[in-house]
Length: 190
Image (cartoon, rainbow, N blue to C red; front, side, top):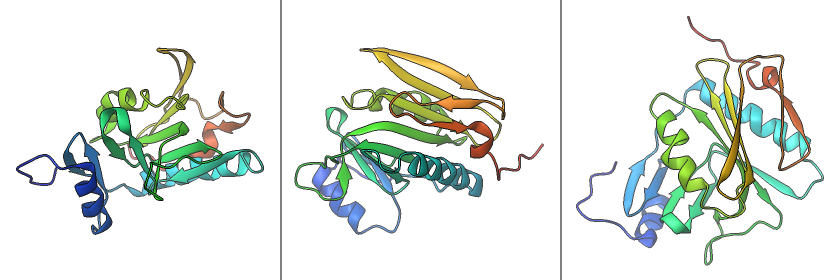
């Protein structure tokens, strides 16, 4: 976290972020430095984003990876999901041209430093977004994908994938992705 003596307003954060060479989250007044990703982290995010982009071609969605900021107004949170799919037309934060508010699908690649946050508090935050209906967590250290699908208000179904030969079917949009395709270039160390 950036050393700060007082809480910052969203406007102060946005000004700070626009002038920064690093990315930061804004969590209820606190500006928090985002950790850098490993090559495997980036490879997994790119593999997913590429598969989604290809599979959703011609459909009413936009696919974003890594650098697209998301605003969650109910919690006063700005964040940068690893991969996000947004329904068209894209909805932006009022007064902004660089911050989306309507993801239907979000994916995070888990790292040792963020996995608890991604599974816990961050997932809770994402669930406050009305348009959000599907969440994918991809482990970069072993073959494991956690796939959450919203089935009703306050109800989510979890499916775990740990076999390269399986396929994940998405509910938000009509495509599927082989788990092997996500992990194609990942070399796990023993």
